[in-house]
Image (cartoon, rainbow, N blue to C red):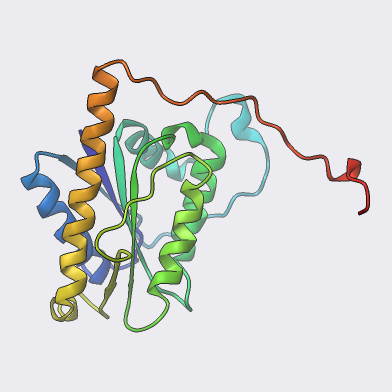
Length: 209
């Protein structure tokens, strides 16, 4: 069982990293293999709807190739985002929008925990903004004893949010537990849910009410 931790902050050792470290320590104790990915500070384009990924070669921008491989290889995810203007990291959103559009199969039916980190308000909103991607991939969204948020402005101040750190551990345990359940189900022949052929509403065919 491999869990991929994605640090969506421009600060590699900041408050988001501290939240992820709390999750990582807990998951390692439970036998999970951990992989880490830091999105860095380089600029990343949003999806331009060019359609080039539909030929099977992935996103035309090559900057998400490594992350896509890690996602494909993972059994679950913990994604941490800072809070920017009551929202998630713009860089993280840009990368996820292209990852999901060009390779959503890397995420299907895999559990995910999204952690929002902020100094005051907005952390919950930031987490919800990232969670929405996984609602398109039938991914179980994991929480702990409370929504996975941590109040901190940097790695040092995170130590004062004891409740938040406890919730990181709770979220991590729940994620590992469900990942193990999914793995056992696969071993005993429990197949994934049947997916119907997608139906897309043609708005032009709708009659006025």
